[in-house]
Length: 438
Ligand SMILES: CC(=O)SCCNC(=O)CCNC(=O)[C@H](O)C(C)(C)COP(=O)(O)OP(=O)(O)OC[C@H]1O[C@@H](n2cnc3c(N)ncnc32)[C@H](O)[C@@H]1OP(=O)(O)O
Ligand SMILES: O=C([O-])CC(=O)C(=O)O
Image (tube, rainbow, N blue to C red; front, side, top):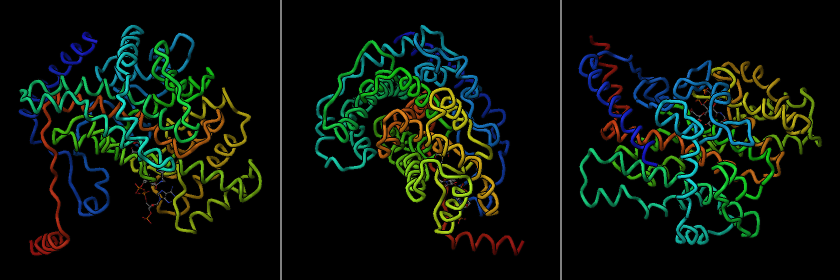
């Protein structure tokens, strides 16, 4: 473990010095203006956060440390029997800023396998819920229960120097990531497989072991998991799960508390829960029309019906993206190789052919193109993971990689407590009146 942590510290110290100089020399440069509309409308487009792990371009989509998803699929280390990138390598890239060697990725894999033991009280917390409880509720509670293990919280209580924060946050982040697949698989097997749990296999990589514990040992499903856990990991800093994790961390809450905050946000239907909503919407469409492969005309009518009922078409639209999400495209490419004949996958593709034009024609939806959630459910259903309530937990396991790598950076760079200014509408009205007088 030591050498990756030391390397991270080296890179972070350099960056920290560069940022200090940058603020001293250019700190007064304005990044733009904030309008009244932005304050009321979700702060869209306000540049106000620093996140080192990834950057989103509205037209090109996400880049992790400068690498697009197709580049990551090519360049990141693979499992010995696989073609898809291993998320261990992506974590290294987000943390250190360099493409890892096979050895670096293997090292992270081995550390996560070694730290994967979940204390018993976490399972007891899960068991205390009715089985009917939504998996995301169980997941959030289980992560919170794991907070008893926080080295950061203990060290802070004992009284450590600010300079040491990053070290404990790093250790907690590694341990938390290591344990998430076991927690998620436990929730899955408890809820859907009569509590028949499957023990981890320490010889497998992080994703393959997760697939194994869920009960899916098919090689091609393991490949899907490697891809899925890579592409869902990060989407710069302003999305709800990343921002919530970062915000809570700014109060020096430990990684377990921060990640719980991120996950309660991911559980919302406009964010991560949309993957569950998409497949439900598609299955309702199939049921209503009595066919697994409705025609494009039938799909178009169904989209119009959804809009006329005042509902969103799940999996479409985005707060930042203005083109097809490259994470959708990556899944589509995977499906073309592994399950092009699957009727639900074909329906996802047919929705893609007709939805953008209809959504565009409303004149108000800023992005009529599909996002990451539009495809994932159809792929999971193909492999038999049919319980869509669970899909956001898979997303959450992946999202841990980005938000926790970022949290390590937040503490290594010594970022302060986050506290933007809020106003009342009365204040805004007075402000408008004063502008008019000028
Ligand atoms: C991993 C992720 O989080 S990706 C996003 C997952 N979420 C979804 O797929 C849910 C469906 N999509 C949406 O609800 C939205 O597009 C969001 C939440 C993703 C983005 O929201 P915004 O940035 O506010 O979108 P936008 O500025 O285009 O919204 C303008 C109007 O279009 C509507 N709109 C946006 N997308 C859709 C859609 N897919 N279907 C119907 N209406 C939509 C908005 O609800 C809003 O309506 P209103 O003015 O009546 O309130
Ligand atoms: O960027 C966003 O707002 C939502 C999103 O796609 C993600 O978090 O993956």
